[in-house]
Length: 389
Image (tube, rainbow, N blue to C red; front, side, top):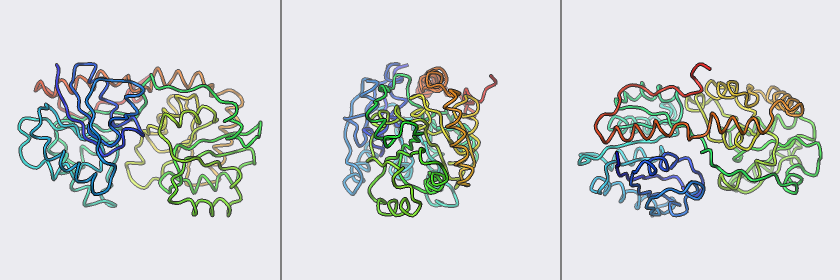
């Protein structure tokens, strides 16, 4: 079944691949695709896994960006598409208001990798719930979260699990001895942690800094900061006495990050338990680390811990307690030295179990069924990693 779709997103296609992740498989199946988003003509996913599509740029944020997106949303119902594909949570409220009324036969798909907690964001929760009740297909990135959303929003349409995982073809460069020395601060016995991101309470960086203070000097942290909290982070690092053990690089896209990841020893996946979105999480950064052959130190939340334990991807810990976090990192370093997490095994696990390619046939079938008028009803299917071994 060949269809056509308009993909709209406020996410920057030149920085992360996850928004467009379904599109190459749909294009291969014969779908005609138009991508409208910031960075659309310089798509990171398309540079790694080229797929036929038309691309139009949107301005990045600001008044011009809002006006351009509103124009696209208002005109979408009149375009020659079978399906309107809305990506990114921040677009849901805008799409709900702009797409009120008839869609003239077009199907509406919403791909949401995030979660609006009703206590912290009651107004946006209400708008998103209203929007979700208009949908013909709902794409959510995590199994538990999908069921939660179905119950809280009263979603009637089919729900498909679309995990934020890299495709198997994602390029990981060879290790670079010079970059490794730079990250390790010249220490031959350094254990280098890498955090794909910068300072933030939700990612539990304050607790990570406290844990670093409790670890020996050879433990180092590499992170990628924005500039807006630089002075605050400088002060915290100086107060803790670990400024010389934390290497901070500017923010970069996922493909550029891989060069640094290949020269680290373990990845950091910490999440604050501030809402059910973080408690039930299956982050894309997991495959950014494991695909490079790194084990992870992760928060012991249900979905993430299930992934880490099931596939032997590293250690989980109570990251609210810096002492326990430090102990978890220390144990991970000891196990890594004993070759208990060999890079080639982790890499193969990524290819065999976690790469996005494993979900593509089911996703294409759901899209084809949608425009043929026979979508399956019911809740989201289980992730393969929740099935019995």
